[in-house]
Image (cartoon, rainbow, N blue to C red; front, side):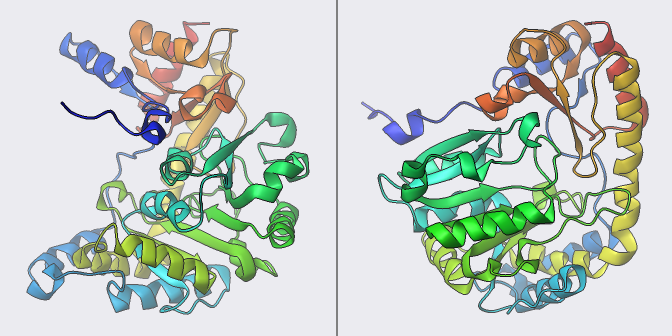
Length: 387
């Protein structure tokens, strides 16, 4: 007989779109035209230079060797140079940087290096499920903080109970934010750094959307702020910026002790990202200045169309300055999962219910700007019929 699953695993929530994928496939099998705005997985292509780089790499037998945690030295150097260009911060490519198999890899594994039973991780709710999953599977205790509009979707640090703060070892932040699309002002970053320094907490900043920003907004790195290197580790990803979600390549930067801990944990979990993908990552970073603005312009065009279309359909829409999402209040008193299911069943539009990323997201739903503008207009028109 197969033994029961661990209590830690069983305590985790299900997949955010559990049941929705199956329902979508059933609708499509009946010939229904389904518009999928659920997953943050853009329909756009990576840069041509990246595709060419991976083609060259797969023909090079040296790229098929174990990468281990050291990875491709050229990728480390290129990341370090990009951090200096983009944020004006100097990062030692050997001690303050670690290649990752996607940022989820690092975010989920970091808690294994710091949490024992009774230790707490402070986690935004709603939030990326890797924060919660890594914490619980590592044996730590999650303290979920609802992200509410009255707090500008920021974690109100001064409202966290003192007994929680005493046991906290990790604080997860993510700005620009998924799913709310909120941004953090510079004063908030300084407050968070001071909070973590005062209480001996690791500040974990998920910066996956650093480059998907509009109207001249330039999201800062946590490492730009004084004192951050004492307490912070920041995660970057090529997934959204370069339309490389399936390639699984990212990196962590920050305090060398934090980087060393994560590297040690990962040495027991994996042997690193494929060297050929890291060679493609070099090509991606080298075309950042020339290629990324055009890609971001596509998302901005989609954002503008989606904001106008959903607004005209009767939804209350806030215009985000970053990310590839709109975070929209559910236009009724029904649970967000029920509303999302009606969107799919009645109108063939798949959206992410706010509660799918944590109960703190109840009352909202997320749409992803992952389809062309005409499809966004069509989706808004259909969902307007539900009002």
